[in-house]
Amino acid sequence: MPLTSFDFQQARVKQVLFKSRLRSVLYGVREAEPDLFSYPDNPLGQWIQSVAKPELGNVSAVRELERTVQQMLRTGQDLATRYQRGHIEEARTGLDQINSFADQIENQLFSLENSL
Image (cartoon, rainbow, N blue to C red; front, side):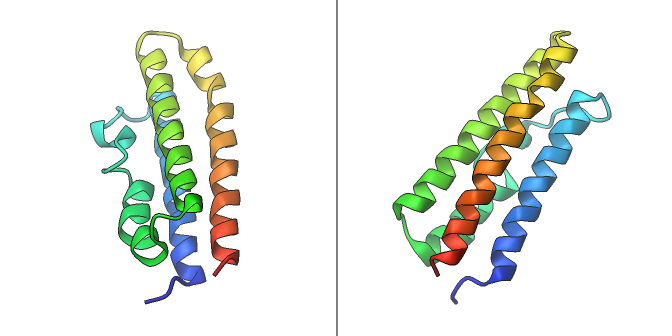
């Protein structure tokens, strides 16, 4: 079944969910769950694997989206580690990097959606 705007909206929601969960970790509201930074377990990673790739294949735009999500997850894990080691302000300042990745992901999703 072809991808729709709703499919891409789901991906955007999953991105916001990750940012929200990470922010909760860096502000001490919740503990970092192991699957938070795992690409196969991350909701956006799962969306790429189960929705985008089956429909779009392994085109360069999908691979680039995958790489950006993986970089964001690695950065998020690094920030959570910094927080756990007591470098709280440094970790929170790193949220700017996460926002930058989120902007890249949004642009990549927009490009993919418009290419359909």
